[in-house]
Length: 256
Image (cartoon, rainbow, N blue to C red):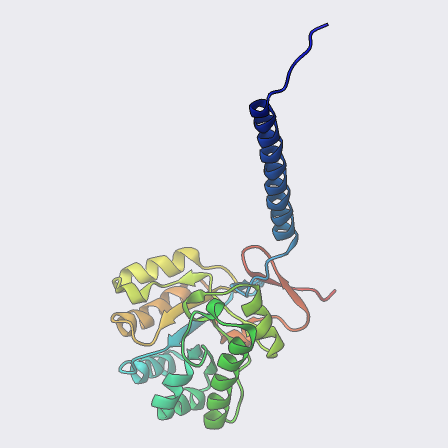
């Protein structure tokens, strides 16, 4: 029988190994638990498009800064008999109240794009509610109607943002077709991008201050209609009643 003698140094080595093993197990457990908890928490997705089969689509304009093109866009929409949706920042509303009234008078949706155009995910829940409420109040004061739709600035959202919007009694709206007009593509490039991605229930994103949007807009309207689609505001394209959104943000009604 062999007898092993444990020296002080050997004992220290063994103890260190045991301690490191315990720490490794703890880290692994905590990491695994965190992954499981994260996976168990479902992600709330805003409305990017709507499940429809009637070939209706919506065109929307975000207005956050300049106002040089708004009147021109309104004239084009009037001439083409298209009703659109305008998402307005509260500061823009305060700066251009007459334009807000003109948009509403023309029958377009006048909706909420936050009060100060922040990254909403960097705000607390209460701060998000304030951003939403302040813009709603400004729009209602000018138009007599409170917005029912909210579009997060920069498309920036998380579960808290979606919750704050829903708790405000509103729909959180994104888009499934970005015209990329803010990058100044040619009208032909915008037309190709939009018409190649169209589907029933699509929501198109444009801006009121992009360089080539006024030139492209009438051509886009004609090209979309040539594919058999009808333009309606987002308030008319979304589904009534209880709903869910899938992983792509497509809105489905839960009504049976």
